[in-house]
Length: 289
Ligand code: FAD
Image (cartoon, rainbow, N blue to C red; front, side):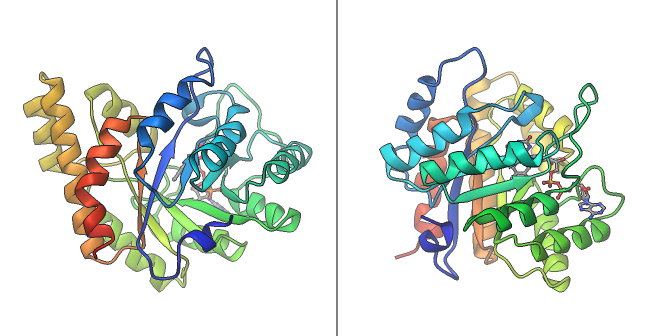
């Protein structure tokens, strides 16, 4: 089913992201994550593809299929294009069609300085136009409230984002951020630039110090004072840091939903405990009865 059939216009979306098990682990380990997330009812779960500098993995499609068929939740696959040729993408499209997966988060992917990119796609917008020509897919794209690290200015990044939307993007999922004002400023600029598709705010609960250091290096998110204070106060106390990280994410979500954002995309980091705590705290706010 396409995400447009799952999330109706104007509904605040609540969606999850998970990643496939690391290369050395068996696919079975994902069942622990999925069992743990069971019953939380996100609108969809997206599955990353070769993220964080790992080689692209083929488990993404398998997991997306398991989510749909075994857990009765809609899924989306992430797909990157820098290291895929048109023929590679054709093969993946075939797999997706065979498995009934209609939702794709289409991305460029990060450059690996040790591997020469294939030449067919330079930007996500080119992949999106190609995918649109290959089938009836619901296509999502990434966006960057604090500007993509390789773009000189946010205004220029938003011009490029508009191109990506014009190429056929149906929904945008944002990079993680810790200051809601950054997201709301970005949202206003995007709307002014004529970007009218739903934009979900990417929220990453920080549950340990190593995670935040890795993530900030990778994506360049800035850290507000109150966040840095929290890290400093609790860094020696893992349980307290986890609880403070959960509370911080809940606080961000309540504020964003109160400001009327289109949705929340929760980076679960395959941690059902954290996803459950957050969901229980915010579900009545996201879907008031
Ligand atoms: P693009 O939209 O192509 O943009 C990349 C850069 O090029 C930007 O600086 C943009 O301003 C610029 N640009 C775009 N179009 C043009 C143009 N026409 N002319 C000039 N400049 C242009 N990576 C993974 O490897 N696997 C994943 O599963 C994954 N999941 C992600 C999920 C989310 C929600 C997000 C936000 C990111 C994810 N990423 C993932 C990371 C992503 O691949 C990187 O951030 C990558 O560097 C950019 O991808 P993009 O699709 O946003 O690129």
